[in-house]
Length: 460
Length: 90
Image: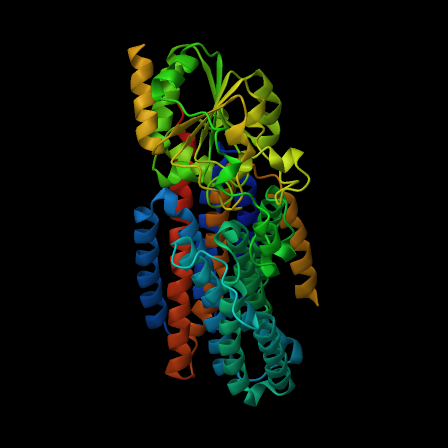
């Protein structure tokens, strides 16, 4: 019987791999997701047949409660809220591994040294993932989006890590009577999770969620080592790899190292902050215009590119954007969307928001592919994006964001920036783009401005 | 030791498969891997259904089943919801 169960785990692990492989293109992705779900179903059924499972009351209750909560959350969540949802799900995954570790210790008490080490890792990673994710979720909700530096933060961090090492050693030394140490370690690790994420700024949250995503997988893999279950180990490793890759991609897109995101605090240091020019940077150099003027520009254009950013999602303007692009296309104008890797609030978020507004995915062009096209573009409309369009990142060696890959919108004939005000983006620095000769500022709420534009063009 | 070998090899497979996922699908990839990390449900079920132990251990197992099932059902469903949006293309 046991062999069959292990075979079933292998089948589900293979299905997960095929499922992830399916995500290689939007066409095969829904089927891939389904394969993953089937794999999970097989794993659950196989576990129910395990001879160690003797009573089903708690299990069935848990499955019913958990599934209903999950289903309701999945149905209700707004696409703009996806980062929060993924953050909190990372937390649940970590929490599950933590709780399983504690329960496993109560049930089996003692075991080999390697078993005890795996148990420690499962509890530790699980706990850090849980509280880290809750803090990340709170930051995404806007409760505490600044990087919070506590006094002696480094000292606290080192102290907690030291405490964890000592408790882990005490537990591994004698696992069967060390239950107290395992619980204490979990509590300290919960504290560590809070401390690690609270010091990270809101702008870096995409990296943090991706990393916590990876942790939740690693926690599951550690649980696999505890139970000596290969299915868990393989699946956990897949998720762990996925999260690491995504956090690397995000870091690269922001020109930051993972280390500086995790331990460096804010994106721009205090000294750099002091040398940043204030309002005088823009004085007398900004050209502002009205919707009619832009409508005329668009009317005569052959190629238009939209560069959407987080501001688009805040203004809930994805549907009006789509409407405007429809109007333009009807007039025979070539319309594309330029997607910076950190547009939106998590990896690939802008793509989902635009897909929801029914923009076909082949209109969404990645940064590296769209950049050469800007020089042949008549009008580029920047919608709620800021730092990722700042030419200073390319030209000005003294700029704090120098080296960050940008959308080279300034190369198009005319740039129209739709924005509420001249307030800075996450980096906190003024944008060179706004004072360029070929830039027009169109001030106002993205949604209203786009509606005006659409109306103005239809009337032409 | 065997387990460690499997873990390392699986990380490599994961790396190969996931680098091929286009940036367009990175959000569904994250919610989908949320669902896969719900595989912790295997450990949770074993703990919740174990015999001859304290009710507290079983109860912790129950809590873990709830958490993991939220991830599994919520993760796969929301991923599907997003992927359907990418599919509908006139």
